[in-house]
Length: 479
Image (cartoon, rainbow, N blue to C red):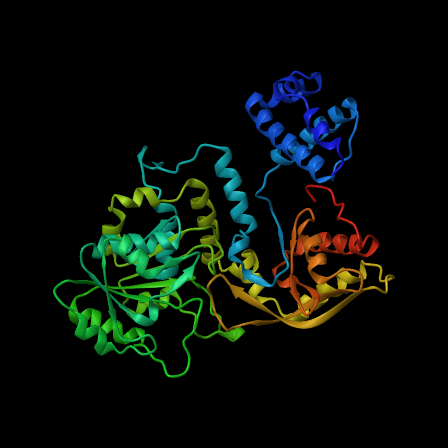
């Protein structure tokens, strides 16, 4: 190590002296001493480490001062930018849990903007001039769409499951097949939520085979609920079986034990035209006699994060009056977005207005046409960078339709100058970030999950990749 470098570290002024520099006065005036102090300490630690490691060059006091100020301003600019920002999902996973699941429709976004900018009648009955309930805005729509007697909304489906169990089965037993004791994601496990709800888990059957007689033999005076869970993110195949819904409905009625069904994704459209015939719909379950169903609002429904509970009026009302309901209820923005999303179904416009439904319905021919249009905007003059359009598959995702895929066309990018992981990393550094797949040393872009208005951003990113293969993307923030 250079003998003078430790001496350079000692030449770094004290924090108090630096805070008195005139160059920092505007920053201190706008942001306050505490924030600037925190960021400055981080900058100084970084400079000390760089000097010790021989990364930073020694400089005169004036140069060191300039470096400190420059890095502090850069750090503040970086810190002051929103970390949560929009992204372009080119992975082909329609309901990507890590990317926020369903994007909202334009109508839902407009309703959020309108409601958040003004006061609203969230809990005010305009006809009576008195206090009202926020449930009415989506309850009326869900009754029409699902054919149920009553419905309510909480902040996600995990909350819906918890509230059902706590209300209908606290201190009592809940019968559930061993094959349905699943982990959905982020360590959310059905047995854990059962225990936290105050209900007692009573497993029936085996992992791969459960019969209706297993449920029947397990019913005692302590049984409060039969719970059926849709295995939304996995399949047990081969030597396996479980009772069909009609069998459990009949058992529920004969034993006077309510039947609840966690449907997970909440699909309101017929997926059979897309080769998916085993994704249950809540209306079908309710019509068959299930007492209470619950499902997510931000999966196949295509709305905001929420959990919907629907079914028999007496049971849903009991859930509604549970003191815990208030801790789990949704705010005005979620209510506005969900109401707009459900109105699209009521008006028969879900195929054109709701992004998730549009994405699922896209044919690979339509996707290929968009891919060719993008590549036409990109000069193909660099032999070391290869663009192509290949066959591939998209996934619905979000814990929905496992083992089912949708045929698609992919933009394939291969380079002899940089690895596929390096190119994928550059896409993530774009503004907005572009999330892609990497397979067989190729970066793959699936336009099924790219909103049409984002095609221009993709074309721009591909042009920059072509013209500057070794450098960073230089797109402007906010693009």
